Image 1 (cartoon, rainbow, N blue to C red):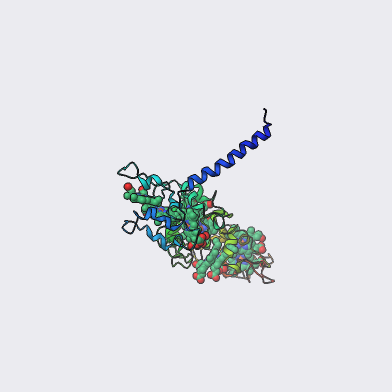
Image 2: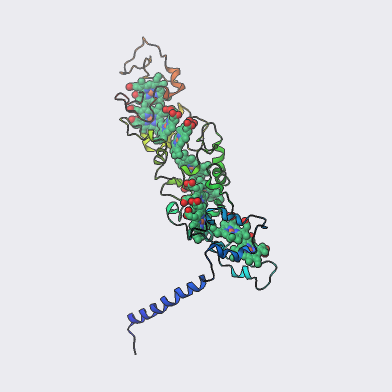
Length: 320
Ligand code: HEC
Ligand code: HEC
Ligand code: HEC
Ligand code: HEC
Ligand code: HEC
Ligand code: HEC
Ligand code: HEC
Ligand code: HEC
Ligand code: HEC
Ligand code: HEC
């Protein structure tokens, strides 16, 4: 008898759908995912261990009342060969999932992500860290009672092991208060990935800065274009020797973009109020001195005090 191909397909599908879950269940059956199941491992791995192992019970992974809490085998795998060591080998066969040095980054991430998907880790796949084989356990210590990277006081040290440039910058005269633990890298970055550039917590640099510096957001009657564009046109986030966190000192900072009249050279007095060379309406006034030329070299923001934008009706030049 000829079985119609459509029907044949569904017979195959029926057979498979019975077999596959059965096979999966068989593979998972020996794994006890409750903490009592840990006895399989803790009869050998106890307090006598050189590196503390049981301290995991003092972490969020040791909360017995929480049914989702992983047991040894949820992370390390059933590891039957390791437990039984049937061959009696001097060095036991390794556990199914190893996390230490040389561990495969993708496998480690997969083991953790199986429970920690979504939320703050929504953008983990494809993030700068994930694609460069940085994995969960490069930052997190799961057996230790204290997870340095989740403590604001110790977090930066974990990051600095790989990001030495940011450590150096944090020692400059002007810096965000990271050293004292008042701030953490994770106030601006989501190390698990984000929709913004450079793992920033928000979609843009400015949105990230506004989370704390809301007063710079505006809208202002007179906006200064580079400010609304990107704070990092003038500021650097991790540290600078030009306070406050400026990329360059004034007047050079401003002269990178401005070259008209008195903005042109450091000691140009051109069109400054009271200047000899050109008055504000453009006419020569030989009767006047140029008392402000030196002042110009000191600081543009001495006069243009509202560089972030002005709400004064006459603040078009950010002088008030
Ligand atoms: C019968 C005793 C015994 C049992 C049961 C046992 N282990 Fe081990 N395990 C050892 C010994 C001994 C070592 C030291 C490794 C060696 O043989 O060189 C070890 C090593 C390890 C290591 C470190 C491997 C490395 O290279 O650093 C991990 C991880 C581990 N065991 C996890 C587990 C887990 C998880 C379980 C439960 C599923 C378990 N063990 C059950 C005896 C045991
Ligand atoms: C949440 C996942 C997770 C659970 C649960 C877990 N481990 Fe681990 N284990 C790790 C990671 C990750 C490492 C690598 C070192 C680290 O990050 O602390 C590790 C390392 C080890 C080591 C090697 C020692 C070392 O520091 O190199 C042993 C032995 C071990 N685990 C045994 C156990 C035993 C026994 C249990 C159950 C009591 C257990 N693990 C539960 C993830 C886990
Ligand atoms: C079987 C599921 C499971 C696995 C696998 C697992 N975790 Fe967890 N994890 C939990 C649960 C449950 C909690 C505690 C409840 C919560 O806050 O989400 C937790 C808590 C945490 C916390 C602390 C969260 C907090 O708010 O305090 C961190 C960090 C963490 N896990 C990292 C890891 C890492 C890294 C791995 C891989 C080595 C891993 N987890 C593997 C289930 C798991
Ligand atoms: C580059 C370092 C780094 C890597 C890699 C990393 N984390 Fe984290 N993780 C952190 C920091 C920092 C925090 C604290 C964030 C905060 O306080 O806002 C954190 C917090 C957490 C928390 C608890 C708070 C929360 O966001 O829910 C969990 C759970 C967690 N990480 C799981 C993981 C898992 C799973 C992976 C791997 C897929 C991973 N982490 C990879 C640095 C890292
Ligand atoms: C005040 C917010 C803020 C804090 C706090 C902060 N960053 Fe950043 N970070 C930024 C911004 C904004 C950028 C992107 C602009 C840039 O490259 O200067 C960035 C870029 C980076 C980059 C990429 C640099 C490059 O050249 O591509 C790394 C790496 C980095 N940060 C690491 C860290 C580390 C590690 C810490 C904690 C010690 C930290 N950041 C704290 C705001 C911050
Ligand atoms: C194990 C090493 C390692 C650790 C620890 C680490 N990073 Fe990274 N990080 C990297 C690598 C590798 C890259 C990608 C290459 C690069 O741009 O330097 C990167 C890139 C970055 C970037 C730039 C992302 C981009 O899009 O260019 C930021 C921001 C960053 N890390 C922040 C952090 C923060 C915050 C921490 C601590 C919570 C941290 N990193 C811990 C290795 C690490
Ligand atoms: C989590 C909050 C937070 C975020 C986000 C933040 N800052 Fe700050 N910022 C601070 C704190 C706190 C200070 C220190 C204020 C003090 O010392 O009085 C500060 C100080 C500053 C200073 C003055 C530094 C000095 O030496 O006086 C500048 C400039 C600055 N931030 C720019 C930025 C820029 C640009 C961004 C975005 C890339 C940003 N901040 C994001 C909290 C934040
Ligand atoms: C055109 C260059 C420029 C841009 C762009 C810029 N700033 Fe500034 N910022 C300065 C200068 C110059 C100072 C120092 C003089 C002053 O306080 O007005 C300063 C000072 C600051 C201070 C310290 C103020 C204080 O009272 O100590 C903070 C905070 C700050 N800026 C945040 C920001 C934020 C947030 C952005 C982006 C929205 C931004 N800046 C964009 C030039 C700039
Ligand atoms: C990244 C480039 C950039 C930097 C750096 C910059 N500006 Fe501007 N500035 C602009 C742009 C663009 C405008 C608007 C276009 C225009 O009208 O010339 C502007 C407008 C101005 C105006 C109003 C000009 C007018 O004709 O109405 C003043 C005044 C001014 N900036 C002062 C400063 C001062 C003071 C600094 C240094 C603290 C500075 N700017 C740094 C790009 C910059
Ligand atoms: C002594 C006060 C003072 C100092 C110092 C000063 N300015 Fe001005 N600036 C003014 C005044 C007042 C105006 C308005 C002139 C006008 O309306 O024509 C102005 C106008 C400007 C303009 C608008 C374009 C123009 O020529 O009218 C720019 C751009 C500018 N200044 C940039 C700078 C920069 C950059 C510096 C530092 C190198 C600086 N200023 C230093 C007072 C000052």
